[in-house]
Image (cartoon, rainbow over all chains, first blue to last red; front, side):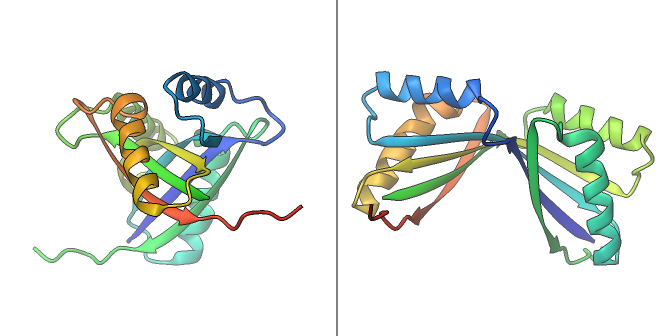
Length: 87
Length: 87
């Protein structure tokens, strides 16, 4: 089993209105020492695959087809082996 | 300078409709080997603070007051020192 930790966020060339809103709010709250904000989505998927290469290919497909809008967003992920629980 | 990597997601006791929607969609797409989905928000804040303890306290305040709804969500973060760029 593998756990995929997936990060999806806007490409740097795309305006991110949510990050801008957070930055404006922080400034209004007096947190002027926050110079940069990135806002993204984070997913953890648990896969029963036993083979890392096939898990990697599957997560790429899932990101391309479902989790990320590849026109505007980029994604990156890491795969962590999960020990199978013994009942 | 520090970079704060912040993860915000629903508490396990709270139903996460977005994670459920992702899981349903994956199942419909034939990815039945995905057994668990966690959906959350991911923020990266860059702070000009030079002191790790004060950066930590500030990020906690920001999470409690702005980034997370502490009634329904939990957050965790890590602080990474950022080398100051020399022009």
